Length: 271
Image: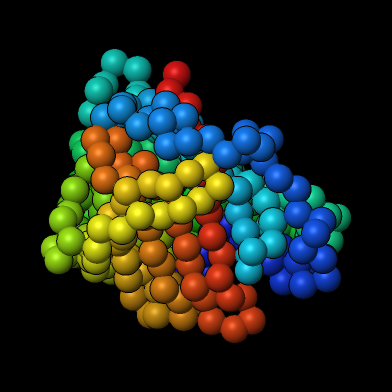
């Protein structure tokens, strides 16, 4: 970034225009509509090791799946490894193949130390690494074209202490426990730009998804519209109003022609 969300789901979503809605597969996990207590994390406090699975929808049409894992680093209870994998699904993969794996190393309360993105998007295969050097106060960005084996972009930006990437930002939101009416500014960077991002707890509200109805707190994260990413969009996150604070739904309302992209939780596992 700025201007692009690293997992470029946009191309897959545009391809979905050609696919009828009745082609959308149903998640096997949700075939019988799992009730709220069916999620293992309903009583597990955060942070803890976990694997969260999501269906991705674009304007109510199935677009793919996402898997988000979190594990503590061996021997260091304050450091964590996180991974987000996004894959295009169904007929979309025949029109636009997307297979992105995003890894983040975090320490000292989810402060980002390193991120790596391996992105297969259409016919393109790229790798992006960002090193967050909090001693120097710098984030260094390197993007490579793996097919041509060349570096295509490098940059370095100043960062304040405990700067977060987008994935660490979600984990930080879960431990901050902002109450409705509260807000805070969070230092964030993607290696190409650094910004103070406003996070706002807006309201308690029930959220109904295929897995059941959840008591949640709705948060808005002001990442877009020229803050960290230039794209016009509104980003909303719903966390369960309990000790685990599961992100049961994440929604980005983007400008035309992309529209709304929604991540809906389908499965929660605790190793």
